[in-house]
Length: 174
Ligand SMILES: Nc1ncnc2c1ncn2[C@@H]1O[C@H](COP(=O)(O)OP(=O)(O)OP(=O)(O)O)[C@@H](O)[C@H]1O
Ligand SMILES: [Mg+2]
Image (cartoon, rainbow, N blue to C red; front, side):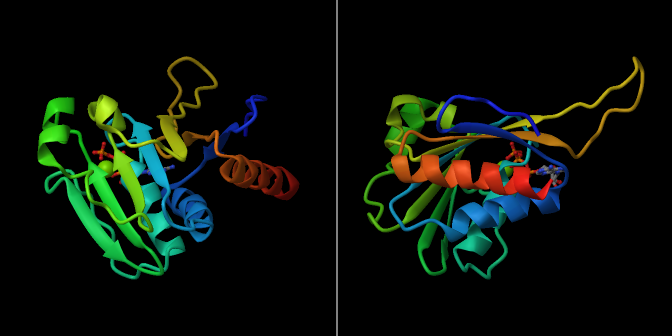
């Protein structure tokens, strides 16, 4: 685990898809509705995997599948989750699609490839950036395939606290 001392921004090492879902679930359990979560990270980084955990934390029992072909999937648990993937769209296409309009205020929005939406994005609550974490002790040694560096960032006071609590819990339990 590594620390970024900036308030509201912490980086954790996540060792497996299972741990990524567990972290997502911890976040999902604390959602109250109205949050916009930006899921950044390159192809296959683990964005959908983390959203699967968020959905569990929202009490969604249906399996969460990647929305990359259909652009949006909607799930109902204790809150409604709108899960978007804008990989295939430009900012203009996101605006023209109208997908981000008329979403109920009480819903949670999770967006993969938010950078494709550019200025079409609504104000965000939580940004999750996932990077491949390559562990290489010696040149030529095998890289870890499953480890990720997950950075949680927010400027919303409540979410800054949530991030700090997750950070503290992990430090206490490691
Ligand atoms: N630590 C980890 N966290 C999340 N996913 C992981 C991890 N390690 C391995 N994976 C695996 O990475 C694969 C890709 O995950 P996923 O589909 O969530 O990525 P993605 O970022 O949504 O990809 P895309 O950009 O195509 O939407 C999955 O098979 C998942 O199990
Ligand atoms: Mg995905």
